[in-house]
Image 1 (cartoon, rainbow, N blue to C red):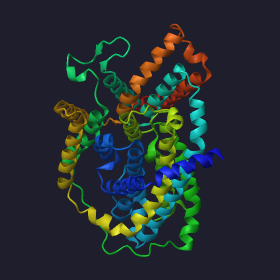
Image 2: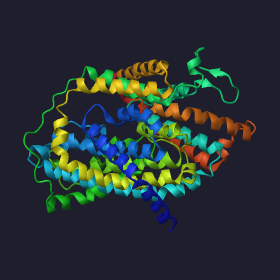
Image 3: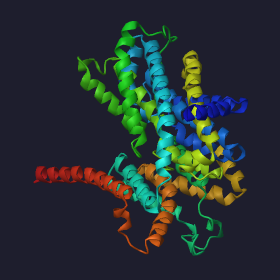
Image 4: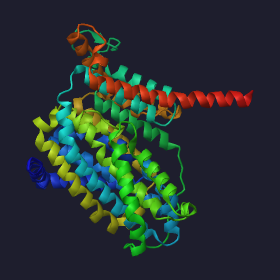
Length: 500
């Protein structure tokens, strides 16, 4: 009964005319940037973050969330029609989706991707509504030691599960934490890492870091990229899948939804891992695995469902624990902070209209995605003909205007350019920026809870292992590190034996 009351509150918020408009704008813009390779939700949300200052919290979060899961949907369109994923999580959809398109079956491929996305999105939203409140109640009982260990686990898991080496991931998280600690120490009032610059007394603004690290660096990185896009001629017809297509797809859709829902909750895993894991499972379970790569519809249904389920369940740890499970979730967490809302379990108790309004808007947004996208397939394909040299100057201009208007400071624009250079260097060194932005957000909170735990325990470090939940979080973090280190050691040993 209590859940129904909460959902009633949520739909009353989400169905207000302005919030419906924000939801529509979010999913439409999300699909647009999902279709365009090289832009992505990270860049778009980082550009739009300054605009959220003037929006109500509910409207801002509904729009930004719509951009996020709308991009997850839009990436499949170009993956199927052009063999060019708009999102990295849609890369695996290219394998069989494009082959179906070449065989004249682009319509069923797009329809199954849409069905899988809607089913997964709705199931993921149900899980948020069911799991969020009890998880939030548990989190309200966390002390400083539990929060400190939880944040440490989130940073280590994000570092361990990203592409590349564990050392790079840990180094990025550490660097992000150092930048996050810049400014005036709350307890002592001493300036830290400011190098005598008055502009850093309050630390780096999150909008500045996000815009520079994602928007500016992506612009520079893509300036020299030339891609040939082979767009299939003719109109996409026969969107309605056959009975055989539905029969072959319903089990992969359910399995993909389950895989994505589980992996979406874990920090650092992301939609890409979920979609590739689903593809591997479907190929393993197939009666004839040789069909995969030649136009198997299961290779579209499973990964697209996993992709969208993970996009939805990413919100569970972000909204209930204040722990972002991906870089994009970190930006949404930053949007909450911009609104003066402290992330964590208190969001559900102190701002129920925000939490349940966002949950209700996800159901509405997933329905809007189907209504908008299938009839507009031709429009999205036409957008692929827009040259990048027209898009990136506009992104750069809007980013600079947004950054400047936050504090009316040209210094912020210079700082954003500095982080853009850092982000470009990260890309060249093959270092993913996700652990950096997570470290930037969680580093100060980790330090605050560590110091609080030390004060409460009178300097006794054993408090982190005597508290049961804290010990579990530390054990999981240690286990992740061991899982990553042992394969690295074995690989180096094999290389040494081979060379010897």
